[in-house]
Image (cartoon, rainbow, N blue to C red; front, top):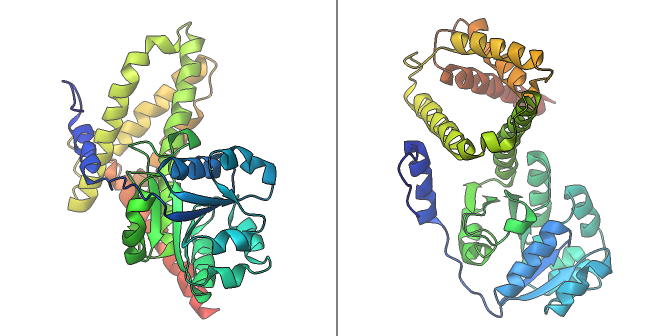
Length: 332
């Protein structure tokens, strides 16, 4: 689908990822196991069944598997039985801690030998690194993932799941996994690489959603509704994408010139905007947080530069902190 007139240049650039999507490849008859049948796990299992695969499922509460059994899934009684049934095991359990509990059940360690374990549960970078090492020590391969959608979008064309771990393992199973998320991305060669990318992208998403919620409150305070701005949401989202690409380009080229506006000007203007919003009886929580974030540039003598200077400073600070933490770990 092309962009009708008015679509931003950055939005057009982002559409390039569509042409690099992994093709959904039917794997009829291939065996796959899904552990955990919450909202995401059930959607994963159902999508794989609809793709023609032989799916084995396990869930602590067996009743959650009933509708999937009716759709053709094999319901395992024990985790070891489920893992042994398939060469590829996808975990959608609640978190890494619960996965550890499952790993401790009878027969699981032996069943893992030779398998590919795809961990889509919620967890930190450190947990992925630790659990990946544990799984690999049992003779299995390990990919950590991050689901960048709500359950309803599993299998949809533009759905993204992030993966990290051995790139050859990912490449071998990419066609099968693409049935869940055709826009899937391998973001790093270490299992711990998926979590930071997952957190960064969802932070971006939910911060934007939070700002929109504040905006809706602002409209109501002035006897307006969502309908007054509904047609403008997509153009503003495109404008944000354009700004993101401009910022990343400036980081690449180290161009922090103030050819559009300066951080100090933005900080002052948005501070005034926050005051106006407060006078309407609304707390501009998200915008205030953004203004506080801008303050780092003037504090370091870079208030007359582009907003990319803020990103540059924040990234430098985070790298320094990470370096100190790593040094402390090595010395302890």
